[in-house]
Image (cartoon, rainbow, N blue to C red; front, side, top):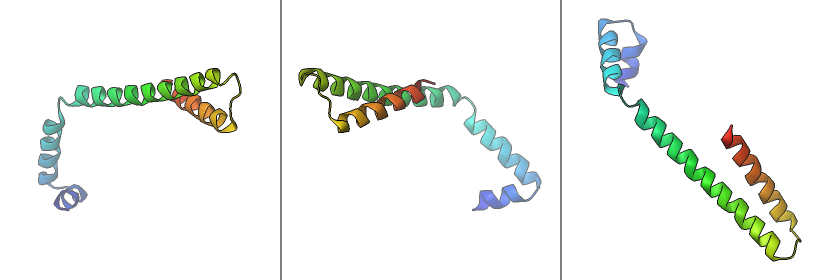
Amino acid sequence: MALIIIFVFKTPLRKLVIMGLDRVKRGRGPIIVKTVAGTVFVVMMSTIYSVASIHTRWVDEGGDITPTDQILLAQHLLEASLMGN
């Protein structure tokens, strides 16, 4: 609450707080990028695994795919394509 009040009014304390926050956050960019990239990679691998699972189930059953599997497959493919962009 105090930080919000400090940011609302233009005071010398506001400049000091902004400079302090800038120094605290400096150098953390690569860590955040690696974390986000790792998370996207894990979700993408999960999506690919789900698509492969549906595909192998479809091939093992002799070519008949259920409507539920069709919807799930379409949803996973859309998810993977949007994640790749």
